Image 1 (cartoon, one colour):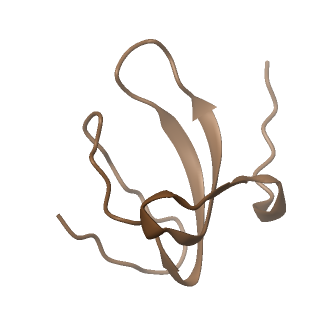
Image 2 (image 1 turned 90 degrees about the vertical axis):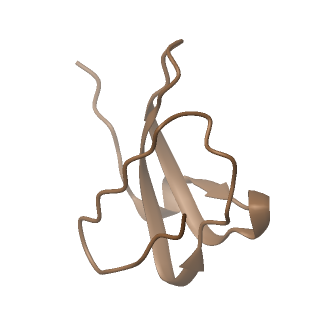
Image 3 (image 1 turned 135 degrees about the horizontal axis):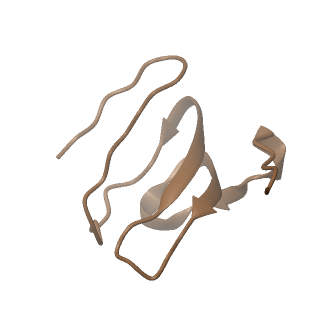
Length: 69
């Protein structure tokens, strides 16, 4: 069994593609073309537009936001 910590201050900061105030805790990144991660997006944060390497799914667990295609 592996225990994960999702504390906001222990995640990896994302700054590519003009992203700001975003951090990720990678959970699973197998050889297949998919990955699973837990993101923290602070108020007024931006996860910049980027080329998707595979299908993506966004599940919001708290707060609200919107997605642009």
